Image 1 (tube, helix red, strand yellow):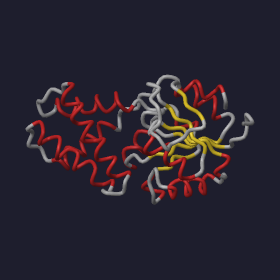
Image 2 (cartoon, helix red, strand yellow):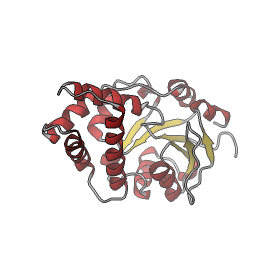
Image 3 (cartoon, helix red, strand yellow):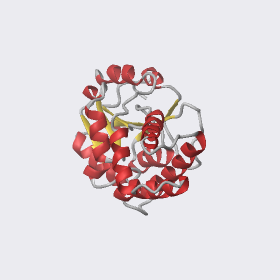
Image 4 (tube, one colour):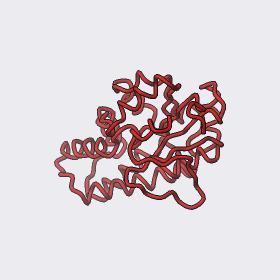
Length: 228
């Protein structure tokens, strides 16, 4: 591949640029502290299991995004024996999570480096209200031309329609874009469906599921500079 073939980079947000796991844990701990419950490892894993299931249901088109948060807390609060209202609890959690903007190692540096060479875009399925609040105060947002959120594009990763609309708004061809993300089921599958080159980011060097393919695989963000 010629070194400057690409004109644009589509970056996933959570667990690719942002340290979502630590932010999630901090927000959940603060939320539970407010109702007199101490978060432990078992509770955290239970919450994450519920969350993963619901987001997977959303990616497969079986539930609406607006239903994720209340259903998540309805199940979780029931599990820990708390009688708080799940909708109000979800709202409080979103507010706490919006204040969590920690980046993964090397994220700022690689964004600054690449922004001088490529048109940069964030592409995310995250909840619009939450993502806008988080990104507006992030130190890396000046490096990006636009943030494409599924709610505003009318489709979600991994649907091809999400990428078709993002390409249209960015004004670039699919052969001119590299999509970088950590999720096989959303980022890599989506790029494959859209005919866009993919870069799989896996700090733990996990293999991709059979049937998915990425032009590049990296375990640190700084590795992007080796071929971009």
